[in-house]
Image (tube, rainbow, N blue to C red; front, side, top):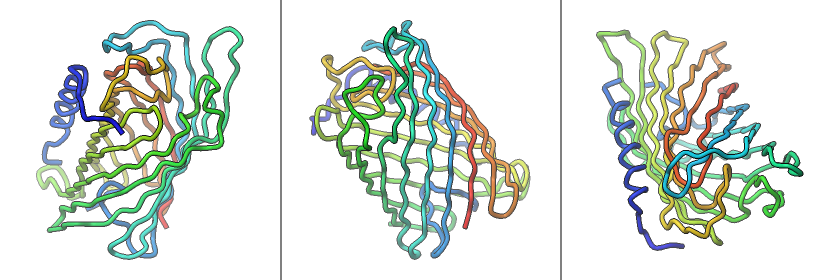
Length: 284
């Protein structure tokens, strides 16, 4: 565990995250994941295929500099299930294939870390809900000393607060839209720095069977260490602000297709890249 000491770079990351989140939080009953609970006996499975590539790197000063090209392919299954009205459980596990254009370095492919969580509501009124979500990250069966790294091989413990609000915009249409904001503190064992995580999502339904999802995800290392390894991916000590936009198209009452892309906007000690995703959602 580390003392909570934000650097000036942390402050810049926080300011950028808040500014972008503020843009999203304009007034915008239907939502997935986030602060909401799954109905008892029902749940959701999302399987995303993700590509990420970069030939640039955010250094310790947050400057974007050239780096060996990195490519990362990832399959990320996610599931959550409503045990009862007061308890939703879920988890995810990544499968990664990573390569850096460095002579002698080979592709690394392995299952990644697993995350398990429980979520419970603490306050609800109308279409607004506040929930809490403890989470544990379990390291996967990879070699943490092999580069590029699939993970850093330690357990994490996170406590997250979530607030969701769903509403209509009568001047636009009669569909439900939603906004979700989250804040978390992640305790990381070993050499890895603890992290503060801030996330904001706005989901709009211009048509009944189509969602437009805007997301901002930010990670801030609590105690930046100049001795931490400089890595393009899976760093143990980094700051990052990422923007993602995707379209989710309902195919049937149970199935939906998601297509989107994302871009790293600012950071420190991590890759400055972009990527795309395609995913399938199944509601049961």
